[in-house]
Length: 247
Image (cartoon, rainbow, N blue to C red; front, top):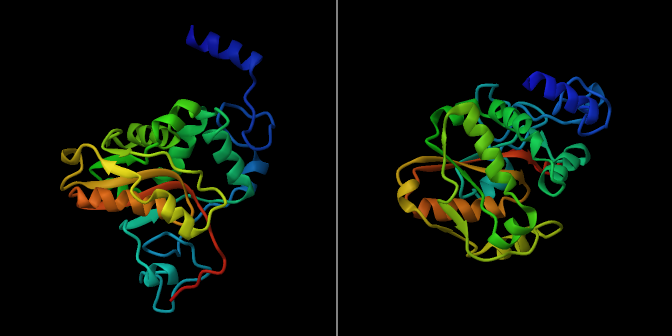
């Protein structure tokens, strides 16, 4: 019966590619054109923030290297990975998922995230989504970071602590803001409501996009103050600035 209803639904709402609108064989799948438009990230990369490097380090492929920004100002989190570069193609996916009411893409996104850092997930104790303020949650109807965390949990078997970290004040949108403005926006915005759920545990902080790291740093600072053993960041996308250099 489920197969019959699924077939009828496909006739009424045929599956199309989220990027191109082309017909595909199943919901959440991508057309060949869409695959070629997406920029997937891989090694070599900064072992801290995951910024991709144009070439391996001179000391050999097994060595780890940090990018110049991480050497100059180490982040509060212990490491970060994302499967996709944040560009024109991935931006339309993120905006559709985040603001366009398209949560059905979340399982595909979680699969990409899981493949980007399997070693981190293997060692993690719990997943913690970046929280939304209740006013923004009311307007958006769902927290995209929590959806990603739950989809990852279904793949990995990890627990999700949805209420461990909360946002105590509404903050302006970070879009278009400078790094300094972003840090000011989120200063004092987060607090750990359930310290016992993060104390002495290895956490994976889940968010949609890594831009300057201001939000992730603010979250990691509070989680570590509450006793977290480590905080690793996993996002769907990250901004890649070609001006960043390897040192």
